[in-house]
Length: 267
Image 1 (cartoon, rainbow, N blue to C red):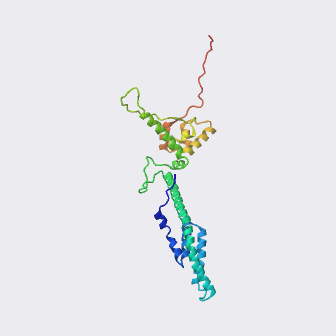
Image 2: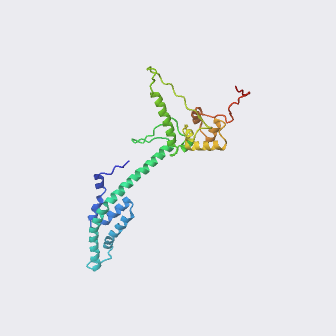
């Protein structure tokens, strides 16, 4: 997506320093100004060069009606003329650099805003930066789990489940035209010993980091023996455990298919 460029009014307002190049004594100030705005050392060096005749003039090192004094005045006049052309030449580059710095500053501000919103679990509005209340406050473990890399995983899982539920509610019944109140959908139960990392990350208050920790524990210890072992491993808060418990189960690791007893008779 492209970025809107600045208008003509903005360019004119940011080019006022060109007027300083027309002054005989303060043309060097213009280059110090644009160097400080655009953080460009090369223009600061030019400002120092243009300021040399000005420094010599007011230092009283040169006496009037002497050859060095005449050379200094000539260099001051020629430097003023040259700085005018020089200022118009670097004006376009200065505006581009200034615009790029403003865009970079906005990007840094957006990154900082996203980091703060993720840390405190709020959404800063554009009007007055009012935080939007959440249904439950986030604990320290949850804030640690909801990192920038974890949020897309959980959001994609919840979005997919919400879309599936919406499609089932909107699908018309072909056999009957009667209006039927949809019953609440049964929550999908996740088996801790067969679930993928994304399935565990989609559980409330778990996230990708804790899901990866659970997968490593399951591989090391040949699975979970109970859901309480899962809760104890992740250190979840009681209110989070109450939300997650209906969504998970643990199949017995020692279950084997029943063996048939008796003799096999061929007919």
